[in-house]
Image 1 (cartoon, rainbow, N blue to C red):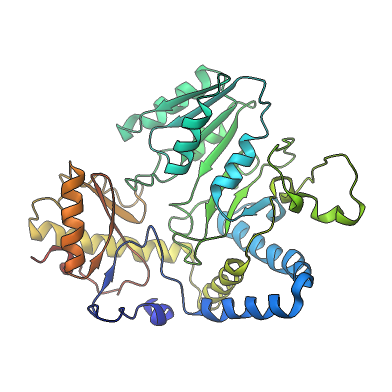
Image 2 (image 1 turned 90 degrees about the horizontal axis):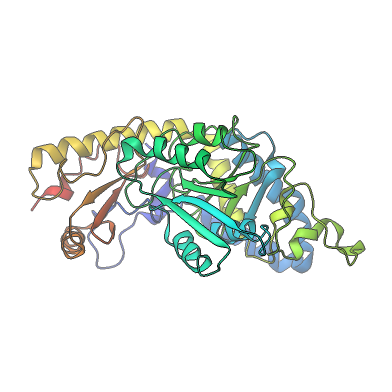
Length: 388
């Protein structure tokens, strides 16, 4: 059904099997064909306009993209969606807003993405910073344990993933927990592995959380364009700030460091906007074709169901329900399956065996990840994964 929009990029590389099955889509989604024209248009605009390109980018392109993102998440204020090349830049800019001379107590889980995990480890070398990590397993009690700790101690910052990057498990009741957070706690939700995969409605928490995601995963526009929604009336003054943050007052700037009451409060500096053009082209394509997040999610649920059916019939020694971290498709899972292979060496061997059968997947230590995308054929049975 949707595969036709990806025809240019579903051609197998030279010398590769024509039946390549891309199941690393949770890491890098293929780009729809319309993105090629978008990149070329960006080149033409930048080449023709030179420094004058900032006008159309800031006055037309960014607002259009913000409005589309806000609609996709049911956010009330599109101008409170900050942009940057990656989510790490945005999150660290938020962290920089805390007074470095005062204690900073952070609540998170032991299952966050590498960049945030590394950053916290470095911050913990500072005496004022203390980090509490709630074990993500067992997932059944994660929400209760996290929420209890959130209200037990005084945290300046709480951070958790909506969908865990290594397992695909959805954090139970995370939006409800955020809605009831203490007023003094800034709450960040990493939504990267859920955005444009699972339906997400942030209306109830829009003014209580920072929500981060980007275009590299399920949206399929590539790297270089991420965002963070900002609560209304946010008073924070990031120490890490760039010249884009005063874009509205460049000609009349003063010696005072002021902050706008919109997304520019968390703006940085110069970036490549080719991905912005690609993202707008994809939003336009999906709008024309009536492709919604709900439809995408239902399509993937059917694909995952077919995968499980093939898996159950195969009796694979490792790729089976005993090793599948989670398979609650409707409520508890993202758009990829994760198998605990017990040892990194075993997950590597299986990954290599799958690649030899023209199945591309990825792994994180002992965890083997197999993802699903709308460019998979709607009749795909995934027998290719389990055949010997």
